[in-house]
Length: 209
Ligand SMILES: [Zn+2]
Ligand SMILES: [Zn+2]
Image (cartoon, rainbow, N blue to C red; front, side, top):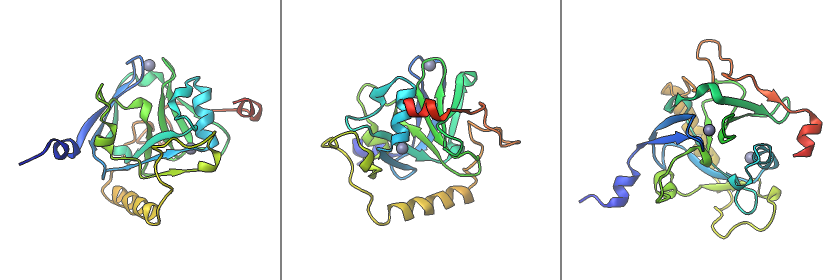
């Protein structure tokens, strides 16, 4: 007999959507074992939420709930002209959001060769029943908790256990071998250029966030 929980944990196609619905997409084959969910308390993720003027993306201590998965399993199906890209500094990761309603989409490395796209919870649609934990599993760990804005919420995930990063590296290698690093929905597959020219904040703009 199949229980409800087992059914929910089968890989599924998860709808992606900005707040206003203009930018939409789908994340395929999503399950707790198909990616890495964690909560990041770093200052840059907090600055990104403030740049978008959407502080409630963060938990009460400034954490961002992120799911890393292979880019080849993410597609944007509508509104791609509203996708924008931000860099908090010359060297930082690319932070993607929508221009229509300033919903954070996620983060990528500057090169499409890095086989990870990190999707922020605000761009995932889990329905009114809030099945995020069922669909993605509980966050595996928290990172950069020293930058937290206050006491961590009671449901904060544990610090990273030995092995979490090894497992992540091994999965990344697997995604790369399976060809799931491409195509990325955020980069031109032929030229490798990001679909939106990254706007780089001036140091004074970054400092103001
Ligand atoms: Zn929108
Ligand atoms: Zn962060």
